[in-house]
Image (cartoon, rainbow, N blue to C red; front, side, top):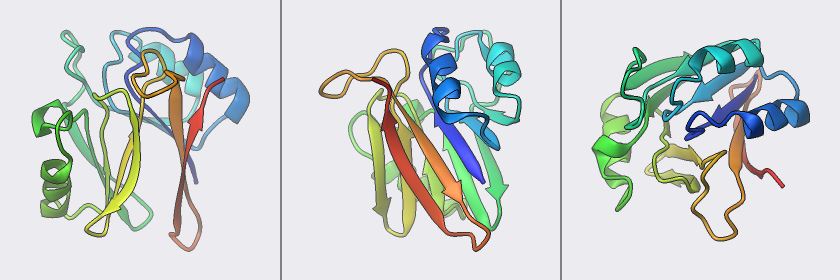
Length: 160
């Protein structure tokens, strides 16, 4: 299963459209918040199962602030991250994921990509497609692949 993971698009959908042109249709899309009113557009354009949560700038959204989903045998905890102090450290959000029984924790908010294994938990932030803050300021997204054996691979990709 090919999962496109994005975050912090802030209503600017041009780069999302470019990602779809590059990657093709994913099997699933996960958006980790700060969508700012583009929920219906993203869902329609993606043309696949979409899992979305609200971020700190999604003031009028009906989306949940957090979500737990299963993909194969993997439990994914999704949150924007602003309630877990992710701008300073990630141990709090990892501990929350462990407490929820998740083996994959995804968050946004910091506009910088993160992909690491902490205490047996895959921690993923795809960065931002519209307002990147890492060195070089290139928009980023992630492709998470879960194969038939439930093996997980992840790649952070840069939109040039």
